[in-house]
Amino acid sequence: MEVISFSQGSLLNLAGLAREAEIPRKRAESYLGILEDLLLGFRLPVFQRRAQRQLVQHQKFFFFDAGVFRSVRPRGPLDAPEEIEGLALEGLVAQHLRALCQLRPEGGVLSFWRTRSGLEVGFIVYGPGLFLAVEVKRAARVSARDLKGLKAFQADYPEAECLLLSFCPEPLLIDGIRCEPVESWLRALQP
Image 1 (cartoon, one colour):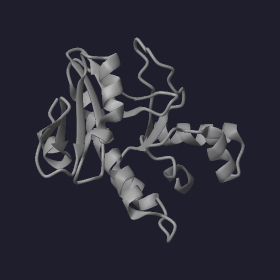
Image 2 (spheres, one colour):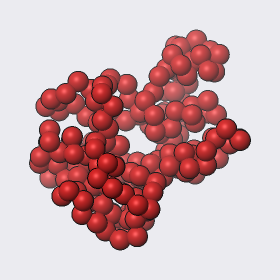
Image 3 (cartoon, one colour):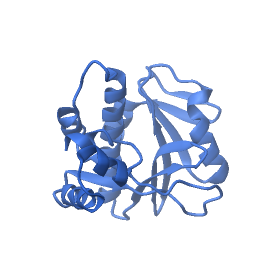
Image 4 (cartoon, one colour):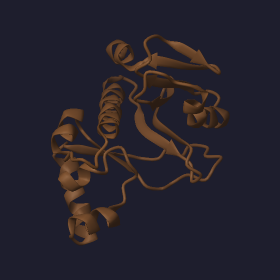
């Protein structure tokens, strides 16, 4: 679990994971399947509907709970606390959005979007009556450059509602994209 904690919120590379754990790739895949069967983690697929750009094919991995991630992720002098906290925040948002998809009577699917050129949106929620693109930033100040991935996604999917969650003190509107304080947005989130 310690080795996979370094894959939290990242593109899942099973070959690299197996190499790091010093086990065969098939065994790493089996262990990952066990984590999913025990509901300790989940994979996010790539959102590919009507894809207009070349997208990555690797899934992302998240622990089912941000607290579990924080407890199994080792920390040391080479680990930036901001990086770990940012991944934990992204995991927290993932678990809330996943719950939203599962609790809605109409259902929904949680995925992410990333182009081969590196443009990314952390979460896409897609289902009947719901099309939401969410990016998460662990910062109190946000600017137009933080919206690069959301703007590209909005250009390809103008029907999607785009949202940036951060530690900004109050809601903002930057270039037509809503930027919300993550805490109040999570408290108000309902299926």
